[in-house]
Structures are given as C-alpha cells and as structure tokens.
Length: 160
Image (cartoon, rainbow, N blue to C red; front, side, top):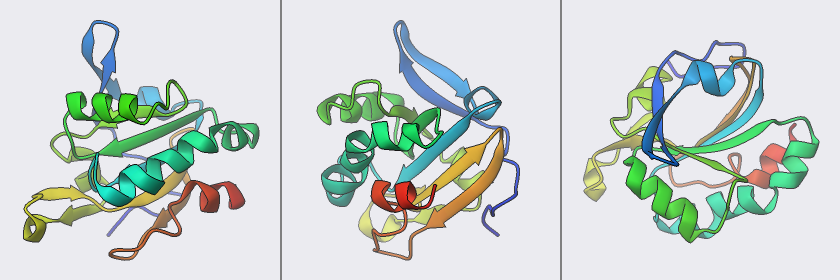
C-alpha cells in the first residue's frame, strides 16, 4: 500500500550535491519542523519531467512558498550527479532542492515504486507530489500511469 494522508514519512536518506560533493540528506532533516512540497519524477532529463514537471515548480516556487511551504524538493531514482546536472540545466537555482533516490529506497518505502523495465529504465518512482508538514503527509497526489495532472505545480498550488 502506498503512503497516505496522515502517514508519517519513513526514515531514509537522499543524496544531494553539496559544496564539497555528494552529501546525504535524511528525511528527518528534510521534513522535521518544516512544510515541504516534494514531487517525484520517473527520470531526470525525460520528456515530461524536463518540459513540464520540474519547470512548473521552478516557475511557481514563489507562489508555493507564499502559501506556507518552506522547501520545494524534487526526487527521482537517479544518481546525485544526474540530479545535480538536471537541476543546473533547468536553471532552477535554489528554488527546488534536487534529491537523488539512487537505489529507490524512498520510492519503495512509501510504496510508490514503478517497474519501468519495459522501457529499459529499471525500477523507478511513480510520478507524484506530496505536501509533508513536520514529517506527516498533509496531502498526496499520485498520477495514473502516463498522466501528468495532479502532481503538477499548478495543481499543488491550487490545493495548498
């Protein structure tokens, strides 16, 4: 069963690119005492993810934060170097924190892993967005296969 509204986010670790190279970020550090808009994509540099999903959150970051969100973060089952390069290529700056879930540990822990082996992509994350308030899921928006509606920045903004 996948994570639901009211559930606590499991304790796992993401990787992010720090000033001195790859650095771990625990879910406890990411979510404790903050309201976070986390969204996940099946893959960095993939068409919908690069043309719509990440750019939408970059574009609407100010409006999302104005509604009480402290941090906006993007995760994908990609390595930290790919996530860093993708964030830089999208010119998001500090608006969106890029979090690598390289082994898919977080995606599995919340029950939102995706078998994309039919496309040669292996195990990935489903496309979703969630609002986490001090470690508890306030709302979660999971896309149906192949869809891009409820996890968009615009939808999240309208549902904050």
